[in-house]
Image 1: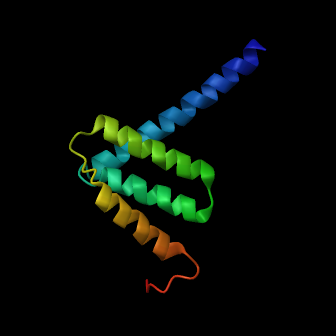
Image 2 (image 1 turned 90 degrees about the vertical axis):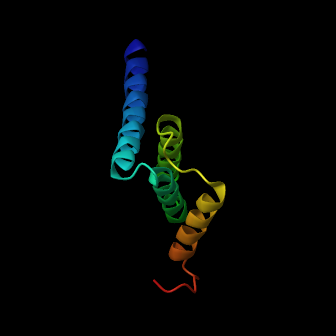
Length: 97
């Protein structure tokens, strides 16, 4: 029983390390737009139907918001980014790529 709890805890810690690492990578690439990029990747995962990746990128966005005060986080821009991703990947989209 104790061993199962340890395995579960280690798995949870690995998930946390992954989203923190991905947040730091996006912040290093561009602090100002890191939050938007995480939201874009979350939207892409959502369109793909990948719930785990959607949750991961949503947590990455939250980590960026928590750790990078320089990151822009305008809700209107987030909506535009998400709409752009949804339009780009929807099968019935009329948008040209």
